[in-house]
Amino acid sequence: MNLAAGLTPAWQQILVFDEFRIGEVNRARDSRWCASGKVINAGIALHRLGGASRTIALAGGLPRGAIERELADLGVPARIVPSSATTRVCTTILDRSGGNLSMTELVENARPMGPGEYEEFLRAYTEEAADAKAAVLTGSLPAGTPARFYRELLERTAGKAVVDARGEELLLALELEPFLVKPNREELGRTVGRTIGSEGDLIDAAGELHRRGAWWCAISAGKDPLVVTSREGARYRLRPPRVPAANPIGCGDCLAAGIAWGLGEGRDVIDAVRLGMGAAAQNVQDLLPSRLDLPSVEALAREVEVERLG
Image 1 (cartoon, helix red, strand yellow):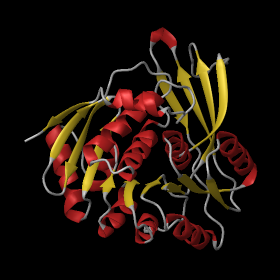
Image 2 (cartoon, rainbow, N blue to C red):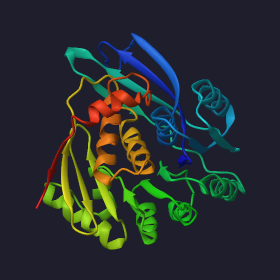
Image 3 (cartoon, helix red, strand yellow):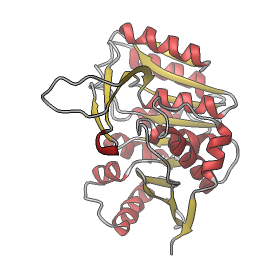
């Protein structure tokens, strides 16, 4: 079984405009609602890739019911830990003017958890993680959540963990030597406290994560090449396939889920990352996140160019 876990799902509105003008009345050409947030996107992706999977998240208020109904409709096995705080609602604005796609995100921060909910989530995770071959640990933390959250999840994770986090919560998690961490370029810079300019800067910053405990790092940069490094000194540059973009929401989550799914299937790290990049490449072509199809993902993964560095 593969597992996705996180505290900050969202009920997501997606609005598509032929042209979006700030400060004016704008009428959307298309609009959709869906369950989203990093943990939900990763959980749906794991399910769509196939095999046994489970998603565990924290949700409350009216969005909780909407999220649970959509996951049930999609057949995604999930355990939603109830929260007294109402789950956030986020909006994505897609502007297709001039034949180009631009995205604006209106993100609501997650509200603080109620008394005992942190401990309840850890108990639930302990039960769900017992049989997990691979786990995606992902998402921002609600205000007031201890920064040690991902470290505590790793203490309860027997399988290979893909940690998609940043900042102090990532640094504390590194003490338990996670198998793979997946910050993007910006998140990596914020975590190590410096600007990432060149590829050399990126590799040096990844080296700091390795010295702190990470076995592997996969540093993404949107449509630009992804860099993979290992604690033993291996370095790779992977170029994603070029595909038309409909909505970039969830691409990083599909990347993380694809990597975890590949690891759970026994693939080596580079093959697992290629699979994740194939998942991201399929995701960006769809309006709704994580609606993956394994044969299509595998075909796109074969288009990923791999170059060993140094």
